Each structure stands twice: as C-alpha cells, then as structure tokens.
Image 1 (cartoon, one colour):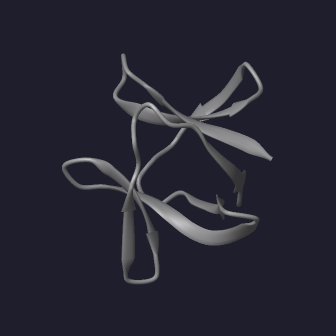
Image 2: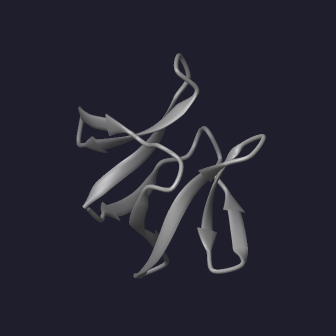
Amino acid sequence: MHELRFHEETRRWRVYNGRKQLYPLHCGDAMLFQVGETFIPTNVELDTEWYVKFGDTRFWLHRKAAYKVMMLS
C-alpha cells in the first residue's frame, strides 16, 4: 500500500512509500483507491484540478489530504 500526496512545488500528485517518494503521477495512471475499507480501480486525471475517475463519477482530490492507494502497472 502507498500514499498519494500533493507536491506544492510541482503542483502534481506523487506516490510515497512512507517518507520515500516513489514517483509523480501522470494523467491516466491506474491505481486502486481506498474508499472506506474497499479499494476501487480508478485513473488519475487533470482538468483544472486533479481528480480520480470511478466509471462516470469524478472525485476531486483535496491538496491537503493524503490518500491510500495501491498502484497498478
């Protein structure tokens, strides 16, 4: 499991393993996003703000929040 956090300097979301930064996200990157106790497949996208897409539903990411994710290759 990893954590998704916003990096202010680059204005991008990055994936972390604890304190270690693994890599920045790009539009279309696939992941499993934790909602409650369930991990749901999604992709990260950029409009005027970053969001994740669950089918036809969009969830805008809050820059001060951290989200639990599992990355897909």
